[in-house]
Length: 325
Ligand code: HEM
Image 1 (cartoon, rainbow, N blue to C red):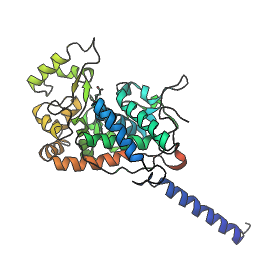
Image 2 (cartoon, rainbow, N blue to C red):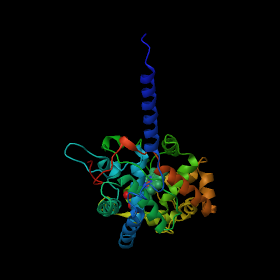
Image 3 (tube, rainbow, N blue to C red):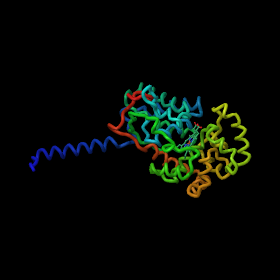
Image 4 (spheres, rainbow, N blue to C red):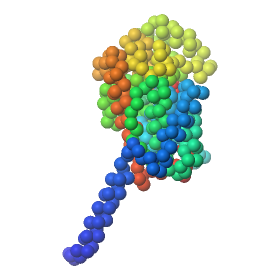
């Protein structure tokens, strides 16, 4: 075998070293990622979300669910924002995503437009979703957590990748939900903490009405009667919906967990968290201790915001959030 010249080996070593260095620096997310390239990044997002939340108070819950549906299936890469084309059916048109509220999409479009004016081609849509979600949550009473930045956006979005296997269904047994979260390295406790997201927002009748009429459904009887009434016309009017937390629907707090033992949970999966011995201890813990819920929710949201992120050449900075460049 021919011997390699020392010069050749040295340049190979340098090449490997620089490749490693670039990939390390490309994959590192930091909280001050835009401090030089877009110094008004945080102010612009805060102004946008505040204006939107004041005029449309359902925005915080809308974006929180959109964020979950973006991150959970294949990482926080803003793939859920891409619109379908005649050649491609995108994630947002998968059946489970059709109920994602327009106000979640709208607040991101507004923030992106303002950011493109201030700092063109600089800020990713996935960073905007992560920070806007955190900031909106804070406006409704949720705890603050740091959001690491430097995500890049996906170059693809495919509806066929979004099935009941990747996003949880309210009818799924708790074992299946646990398995879906554990497959993404979220513990049972983190799953219960994240489910506290149902402290705000609402669900359409079709997501729970079938369950209310069943015997032994776990609903408080008076609550069940009220739900039957509220949803009586839902097959004809699919827009009918009910607050996820009927006691404090617009405030992010631990009331969601206090409701569950009383049979005041809305979705079958919410009831399941209380009836299953693996999840119930955490429901009891968070119902008793709001500070503990806030601490665990903040940690789990920060972790979710880092799930499967794309950096460097694996993603792009989209010029518009609803289309690839
Ligand atoms: C554990 C399994 C989960 C299931 C089975 C589930 C299922 C659902 C369903 C069926 C709805 C009603 C959607 C509609 O009718 O429009 C809903 C609403 C919502 N979900 Fe979940 N979800 C789960 C976990 C989560 C997580 C982890 C988050 C966020 C971190 C989240 C955030 C929300 C929010 C904020 C709403 C209200 C949306 C609005 O008001 O527009 N959910 N969820």
